[in-house]
Image (cartoon, rainbow, N blue to C red; front, side, top):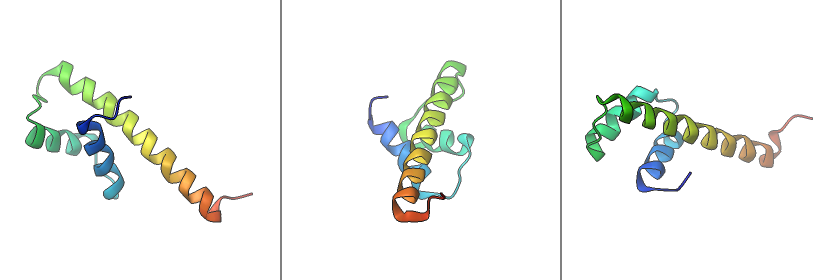
Length: 73
């Protein structure tokens, strides 16, 4: 996935908030990037992108936790 401005923004939201639902993130995108979220194709495209970003951020978190020595084993 290319690191576009919107993707960096989504990842920063996921990193800096305890948990935000996909719909909350969509509303922020609609407000700040003027995305037409009510169009189904746009909605599902960004829903997929948010899911991928969430996976990447959680993977980073696991990696950081393991490096700090809190990994089991």
